[in-house]
Image (tube, rainbow, N blue to C red; front, top):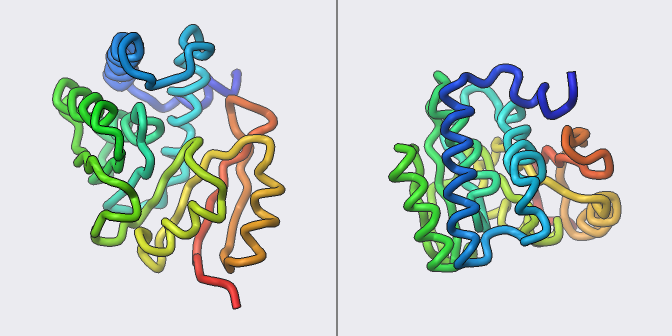
Length: 206
């Protein structure tokens, strides 16, 4: 079994169908607004959808709310909401995206696929939200900045899930200079050089 097929091994046909519909919308809107890099348009399923989907298995049991920051094209927020749609967990998703055109795309996808999400077209620093059980982000900012957001948006016993590329070790070292936190590293199923950072207990350093 390939890593990608393992990511979708417990996913229903209905989920795959909705993910394919999302992929179609993503490619259609990318023709007019910059949702994904043009160089990745021919490999959306692996580079973006599977990469985002692998986070779902790391969402702790009993979680009720997920906040996705800098959602952009809905990666990973939309993908996770699609997977959750056909599961028993029934999470409430909040997607924060300051770009109005991208926020319009997220609302369109949510409406067409009947997803349980709220889209906030605002800067992350400006939102006033109830703290989430899970915080997610992909290709948004250095870890130090993500921890700052997590400190204000994540429940004290919550979990942050951040997709990081090959610079993850440097980012961890820099973040540990100013923040205290517990973390686990998970191998990415789509890129051997990437890692998923599972982070808890975020506190400002002394």
